[in-house]
Length: 178
Image (cartoon, rainbow, N blue to C red; front, side, top):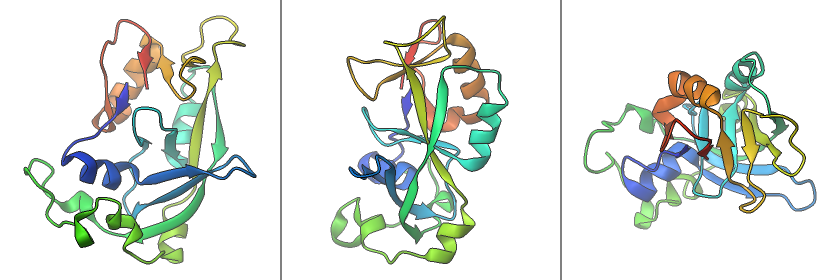
């Protein structure tokens, strides 16, 4: 499974996943994104961390799936933009950011502390490392590609039914790469 890069290419990627960096001192993710809508799960790119909302984290914890944990993420910049109301089947976004750069959907706007509070906690999903995995966990981090995550068929089914709109699946019969 991979993150959804459509619609609208890089513009859609920024709107769905935002910008993600890692604080070197704490190891926590620093998230800059739009709100108030936040997809339940997002993956910022081919080798980006998996970010989930607080309600989706609770669902995952109760799913019976194995091989994962969570680490809190820091909402560094949350900006107001209701892009989820746009026609996602359109060839282009309803509005382009300043200077045409996709990142400016976020970087070109002021942080809204009240909005950041309203969207709730965001979490990084941490998959078990294949170097230390016992048995067959449902989520497994590929140590060759540090941030690649593979999921079992059970995890594929669970994710597809609850968040398939925000993920792209390649081969449900084998462990899928996130």
